[in-house]
Image (cartoon, rainbow over all chains, first blue to last red):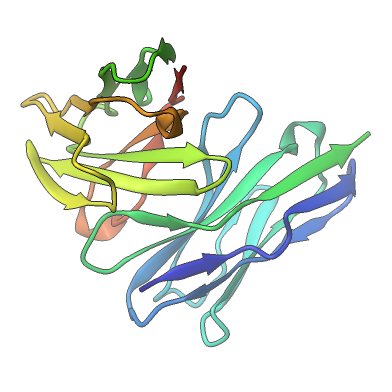
Amino acid sequence: AQTVTQSQPEMSVQEAETVTLSCTYDTSENNYYLFWYKQPPSRQMILVIRQEAYKQQNATENRFSVNFQKAAKSFSLKISDSQLGDTAMYFCAFGGGATNKLIFGTGTLLAVQP
Amino acid sequence: KAGVTQTPRYLIKTRGQQVTLSCSPISGHRSVSWYQQTPGQGLQFLFEYFSETQRNKGNFPGRFSGRQFSNSRSEMNVSTLELGDSALYLCASSLKRATDLYTQYFGPGTRLTVL
């Protein structure tokens, strides 16, 4: 069975600084996807970035980038130039195997301080 | 293109009642999945529907059921509500094509409170 672990329940960062959120996962699948979702106080779950496991190049989306270490089963999210609007709960998620379901971590609550 | 929509956004029910939640996926998306989010259990997969058929089911009692219509809209139903069913219910849709597996787009959720 797949598992996703986020070991940082809460983090804080100053506006304009860089922060890295950690995620590890466990799977026996060879083909899978990894995702970071953002859930602000509005509770809307927003897709931030995704990574296909077969791609060696780390995904980037504007200020968001990942460090995907397949052998170590690690998938961290780096947020550069943090903005107040980045304040949210961030979930790491795994998608793979025969089902279409996503397995989520427990989330990291990120607070961006002015 | 419009996003995933869910109705209603908020519901208050009492124990023993039943409730039906609705989800309209992004146009063209044929897969709809439902998740329950609670502070204690986090995000848990309920079930997925594709082409009007339930494809996968999570570890929830039979009181939780769903269906999908020919236009891909989906409903989930919870019968004999319990206090523990209070949660945010999230619907997600996906294209489920070979080049874009597992990517899901979420609606705003329905907040269910059971009194």
